Image (cartoon, rainbow over all chains, first blue to last red; front, side):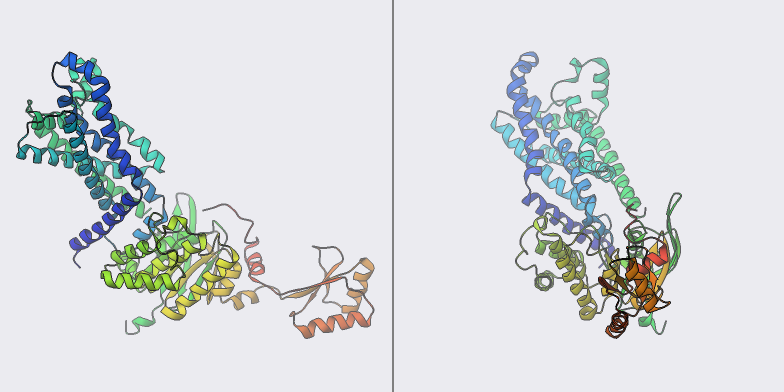
Length: 257
Length: 322
């Protein structure tokens, strides 16, 4: 068996393992997918009325594209926690003493997360449509939206794999990812950044979730995208490749203490 | 090498490992012949687990020439991984999966065809008495069942060398005996080599063809159980008397060899092989001299004595973990 088929086969096996976990203990998947949907409903129905008056438009059309990016943010916690949980168990030592593709365990987690992310996005879109979200995207734009969400899920998952490997326990992993969960709130996901105080506004304008949000909003609602598309792909690739290399080096380092 | 198949399963020369200033293994030499059970015996913190972790490619040694299954550990860890199986001190099973799913996972990772994998899983579940629990999640298993599943998972890859790191620590006596039978069966039925660590002298005595005693990162002795027992002073009969007069009368009666045993009052230790004939001779002698014996115990040397003699401390008085 060649090296690359081995990586694929072993990653697929690890993915099956993670999906089995998710199927048997759905609460984690449920909470990371459900939480953003609940937030969508809260923002729309609790704050929506007030925000609509000040913005003039239909708030759900502004909100839904931003909330879609809540899913990758929340998923980072589940990746890091499951990696940290795995690492605290003997099973990972067993994997390390077996002749299998070394990073297949990590890849299995990341692909599993990608599946959760796509599932979560579809559920959220359906809920948003049901409560009045009316996007005007053509099929190509829809493909681009899903592609960008997938890129964001993938890149942030690799980053969380590295953080999950580094955290001493699952609780630590959960805390470590809290800033990432906050990122969508500190950007243009829920309200336009120009009402924010100066320092926060600058942070919001330069953090990756703002171009992600603006691109998705542009694709779905036809607003101005500008250079946000390139910025999004750039951020995604940098975080993804950086996270992947970091995760791999931490994993190898931990093998040869 | 023409006699390649005769090469030892494991050979290590000058195995060293340190974490900063703390030396865990200080130049260890080991040779484990194929098809044998080798036991590394030592208290907590002696370096047993570190040795297993190094030999099983989990961590790297700082120095030493090590070959496992004929492969060089440093330059070819992947080939080593292909011939070994490891059952760790902390159960290496996926607790969220059932016993059967755990075994199928191992089958997939060893790239066995699904059909073979299923058949092997069923065989192993039967062999390790896990048929009833096969489709329950492993987190519901008892300690003994988890160890059995752990070992069954190790066997899926048909390893030639199996590392067992404290396989019975924390098990009740009954589960321990079951594990012992299973471990003996591995060598008899599969012809594997077993490298086992334990802090239980009885376990090493029961299972191992050869025993190496590890203390503070050094091997202090190596040999068969019988050879190690020969290293310590022989056995004796302990006689307890009602008072000092009785003790002194007995000492006069039995002659020079008998000495007072300081650990208990009015007790005399008489060197002996512990056999019935020797015992009868001592009692007849005391009878003839009309010395009344209050209590009697026969003491044959065990590995505890060996350990105490070799290291100056018993197996249990060091509780600091590595």
